[in-house]
Length: 75
Image (tube, rainbow, N blue to C red):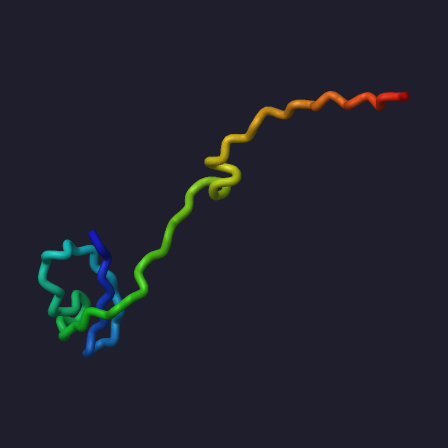
């Protein structure tokens, strides 16, 4: 469910309301009962949880393997 942001014309209070997309927009302020307007907001961005993204959380590291050193061929 999206969160909508509203502002009251009477008391200028801004508030957020969690509503279904199919619900009608609110028309009254919960604080003073005045008329409200639904605002256009940026919404939320991505929320990454964990210690990092991809490099530390998802990428599988290959086991460390020492490569044998090549011996120089003498002629």
